[in-house]
Image 1 (cartoon, rainbow, N blue to C red):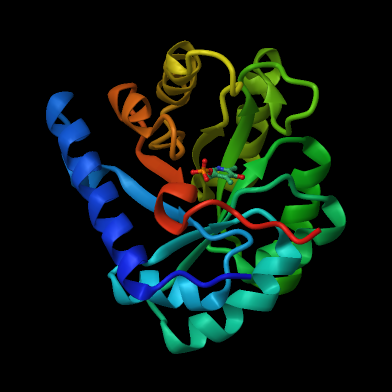
Image 2: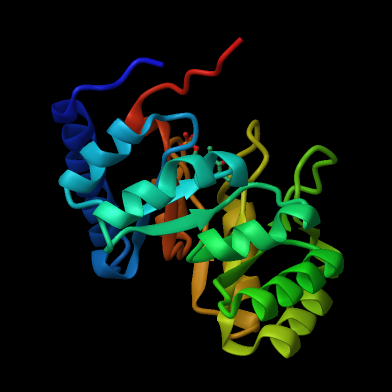
Length: 229
Ligand SMILES: *Cc1c(COP(=O)(O)O)cnc(C)c1O
């Protein structure tokens, strides 16, 4: 897997940060109210180190196994690091996810809530949680259906209290994301949830306009992902 020169990761980060600042200014928002999560899936630890050296502390991974291989060593060297798990989560990975993550963004069904609650009891720690909403109703995507979101958020609130922080969505790729972002922000507001995780490399400025408090950005920081095979 090719490793990017450190300079390029820090330049990309600087460029993203200034775009975030401009988008915030344009919608009368404060940049400190928008958290950047650098999505480091498929990238080697050296790229993550480069981002850490450039002041980036929050990282997102979508596979528990990959996160478990990369992050314990990075965390030991960089105690400020925070790990977000952002990918569809199987119940049999819940325990390892609870052990590793600071934030789990893909809580989307009751059986997973059960598994996380059980794991939290065994591990003696509970990450912050976001409910993922399948905002475009796409068969291939994880997330609770829009129609079921209110009841599921209420269930998670009862079970996890204020460890339930917010909502996360990934709009359909081919559509204008704006209505999906607006729906997700309204859902968070209705439930009094502070965190709205939406916006990726291609659409984060629109997400900021619609109230995103957390952006998950991968390729615009680390370059195109390289998959084996
Ligand atoms: C990969 C991924 C991202 C980042 O996507 P980019 O287009 O590379 O910025 C964001 N969120 C989730 C859930 C992802 O899996």
